[in-house]
Length: 305
Image 1: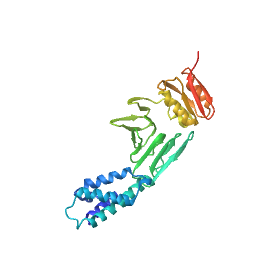
Image 2: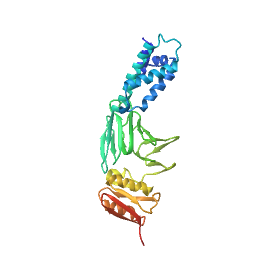
Image 3: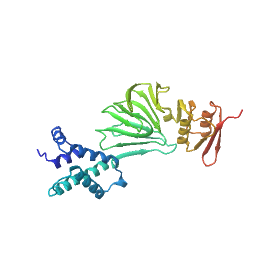
Image 4: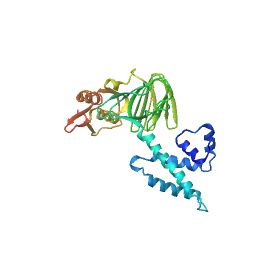
């Protein structure tokens, strides 16, 4: 079996090393340096990618790392290794960015997506999911920003990754909501594992957990399915600032709070098909008033006695 350095690097970049080849690769003198350069590829974007620039930077970095005393033999190997990395970096970009299937919803819009394994994802308003369809059978990972309900077909590990936390399952029904610093997971069937920074827990059917402003709370679900899938947003002791943010996402309005504490807690809900009724559902229990202005603006203030 051919085990020269260039061959091993190519196989490593393609993630095709056999156990024997992986041992040989790990024994390379520059393995830590090579991995460091590959890690830098994670910061690449299409508008920034330049083969010429990448080659020059790689050449300078590799030269500084090795600091050869003699210069007779380094140019050709360097160009060969650099060319491998240029192709590898381009491949990395294509794999992690170009190959992703992205689903994005707009204000007031919801959509349902069937994944390659017949899992179903319902995506709430102003949310986005992304996954690699071609590699799905090997890696059932979805990136999520916003809110989505997952009905996962049984199979390999299924991962939902958000900027705040990660949810791992094998086959179940659960809802994930990540809006800014707010992160919430509700398990409706089966079992899910939730990871929040250094914290990890298991949710069984009917359990939920949420993380907001550095505090973690666990509780029980009120309904058997997420109510937003039925065009109703429901909340249990949620800051009204977040409640009105959700109303903005569903109706495309801009809500301004005047002399109202946005951290005040609200329990209740609102419908998605009537703005006036939705506002009443929020403001009346809290003794607030509202005015619907022009240009899709809403002003909320304390009710005058």
